[in-house]
View 1 (cartoon, rainbow, N blue to C red):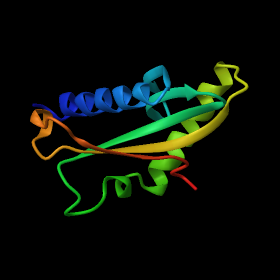
View 2: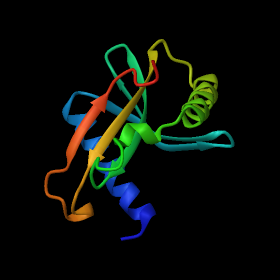
View 3: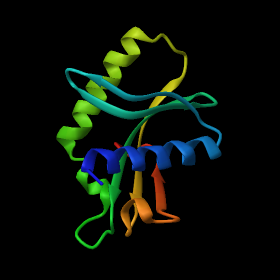
View 4: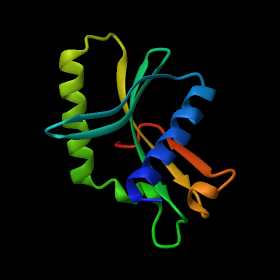
Length: 120
């Protein structure tokens, strides 16, 4: 499976995870000149901008460690652009979802870790 397809597989797992926890997916793969936001989801009074990181394991580093300060800034800037064109009363928040899938797309039950307010 190509890296892009595997990334899409991971994002689909993250979207299913969020839906099971009561989130509504607002948009996926929002792209602008500043960057990309994997998932935008809402629940109650929160609008979550979610970065999804898929890894086979955490032997080298935890998946969240690949969301560098520079990557965070690109996501924040992209979120600001999205918010400028989508009026909302919801409180924005930046989350990271780590997915560990040792068998890639053949992993029956990938381990999913949802980190709320990940950029604090």
